[in-house]
Image (cartoon, rainbow, N blue to C red; front, side, top):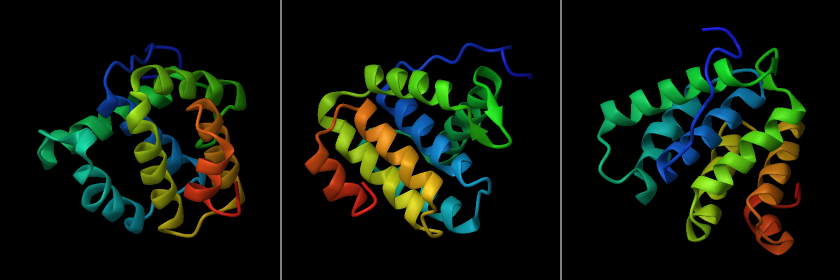
Amino acid sequence: MEQGDVQMKIETAAEACAALAAMIVAADELGTDAERQFLFDTVAALPIFAGLDQVQFSRLMSTTTEDLYASFAFEGTRMASDDVGRLVGMICDALPEDQRAQALEAAVGLARVDGMVSVEALLLQRICEGLELDHEAARRLIGPEA
């Protein structure tokens, strides 16, 4: 699939959290074994993914990542800045307010597991703003990078 072939749809909290995770993994241009381990051990265990077994979670992450690259413009593996805002808006619309901090916390953990780089910290700030979390919540979850 090429960019533009698919119009990604995010309708559930699980799809929103999967899109958030896929965006973070792509941000530093390399998916590491540590990120994969964190995804399957920690992120998959979140209540957002209740009812999904490991195969279903893996399929969700794979489909979400494919749709992400097919639906949005990328510069290398990094999503183009304009599309980040559009995707975060879609994530915010699908993610209930009471699950946003939990999803951001999972994204922060995913960014930190292999050493958070500046592009991930900036992306997390944009995500926090897009999820309409207050600055204090962002600072608490992201840390001094917020």
